[in-house]
Image 1: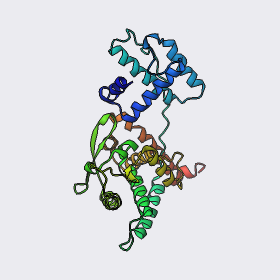
Image 2: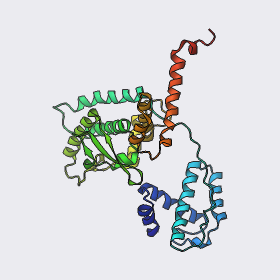
Image 3: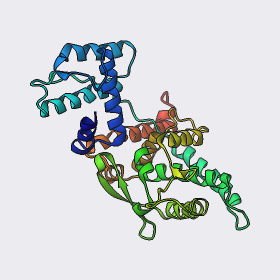
Image 4: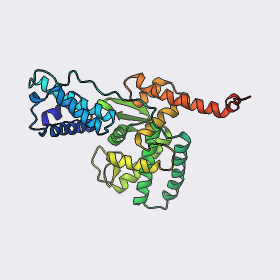
Length: 309
C-alpha cells in the first residue's frame, strides 16, 4: 500500500514507527477477513466486520490502548479511501474508540537514578584516565550512561533520543533541537554537566568510528545509529537495581517531569520541555507530585505519624 503509506507519512504527518504500526494493523485486519492488504476491497467491508475484528481481539485480552490504536489505523485507511472516492461511506464513522484508563505514570525515584548515575561516573573516571586506550568497554559504558543521563535530564521520548544528530546540538550555547511527534521541533537547554558528557562521548565515538556519515548520529552501536530495541534494552539493564515497576525509557521521561515539579518548576515549563501540545497532558504529573507530598507528610508530620495522640 505505497499510496496509503505516503498519505500517513506526508499528509497525516505520522511518525515512521506509527506508520509501520498502522500498516501492520491493516494487514492483520485483512488477514482476519480472509484477504491480504493489497487485495482488500474496502467496498466490501461493513461496520460489523470492523466491530467483529476488534471484539475478537478484546476477547483475546488485547489492552484497550492497543485496541484503540488498531481502530485508529482502520479509521485512517477508510478516510483515505473515502478521500480517493474508492468508497462512498466510511464504515468506521460510527465506530466508538475504546477508552484508555489513565493510571499514574511509572517513574524511577530520584534518589535511585541519581545513585546509578553517580556510581557510573566513578567507573567512567577510572576507564577514561589519560593512560587508558579507547576500547569496546569504554564505548559501552560512556554511551549507556549518556543515554540514561540524557533521558533523565531532558525528558526526551525514545524516538527523539534516537533521531539526535550532531547538528541538533550546540554545546557552546547549551541548546538541543529536539524533533518530536508529527515532526514538531523544540529547543531545550542542555545543562553543563550533560554538555560535557556529550562532548566526551563524541570524542570517543569519532575515534572509534571516524567514517560515520554526516549528519553524524549522536548515539551509535557498532557504527550505526542506535535502534529503538537497543535503547530499550540498555535502559532496562541500567535501571535493574531500582525499585521502579517499569524500567523503560518512558519511565525516565516520567522521572524527569516528576523531579521538575517536585522541585518547584511551573507546569508550563515542564510542558515545553516534554513537547506536549496541551497543558492537560502535562497535568497528570501533578498527581505524582501530590502523591510524593502525601508520603512526605505521612513520614514527617507528628499528627500523621501518631494519629492516636
